[in-house]
Image (cartoon, rainbow over all chains, first blue to last red; front, side, top):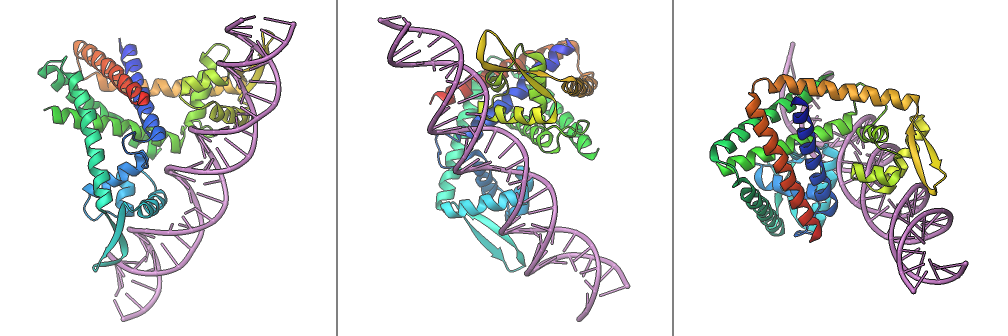
Length: 154
Length: 154
DNA sequence: AAGATTTTGTTGACAAGTAAACAAAAGCGG
DNA sequence: CCGCTTTTGTTTACTTGTCAACAAAATCTT
């Protein structure tokens, strides 16, 4: 029983990995021209307040160097532009251009489509069941995060 | 409610991504010298019958080219060796050396440690609940795989 | 058996991201 | 205010893995 549980969880993990890889390599079909990471970056800039390289890198779990390079490309594509604030002459902030906004919303739309596909799937369960699953997954997620944090300490 | 569900699932997905990245970059702490992908490859060779580049690449969702290069490295490290069979002069098969076997078992051990950590976590739930979660996650995993397959077709 | 097609493994050019070193600016303690 | 430390962003060298082209072997068709 417990063995089955681990197998199942590992199946799910593999599925997620497959999804990540698929999205990473095939890019968003609707929004060709942007990689999945660039999309995440655009999403980040659209949602975070005064986003800079450091904040974005933390949010996407990437290095500052990696973000720095990506943003350079996005500037080249005309998706984002930089701005500064008088309070700080060192930090560089980013904001979406009109094109960036368009990409952002197109991405949101894709998200919603995925969500509605998921909703279709969830219909087979009762409200109470979904509530339980929600709680279970949330807790398991926290458990994993703790385990990973412990791993990093070692 | 449904909104919460999607948020929760996306949290889980992010956690898995975090785990993958963490493992990929920090490698297995116990088995330094091998990346997580190399470990998967070793695991694969230890479990599959007559493993060759093609089979391994399918199992790890990677390209043949990538596997080919990785195996070259593993040969260099003395972890695996090749063999052929009279039936087929084209295919090249791989097997673990004694060192490879040692790495394989060390990895298995790490797996078990993770599992026992998980078991500790699962104790808070009842048998019936776990059974339901098992079924839910399994079904959701299948649902996602289908969605990804559809995406690839487009 | 011979020719055409597919499968298999390898390679080179490329893309994405890391780690580490660095300069400039900001923050802090006396 | 001045020196020391930290933060921030960039760049360089490197690693990992993809894609696409290729040769050799295997398989299929007739």
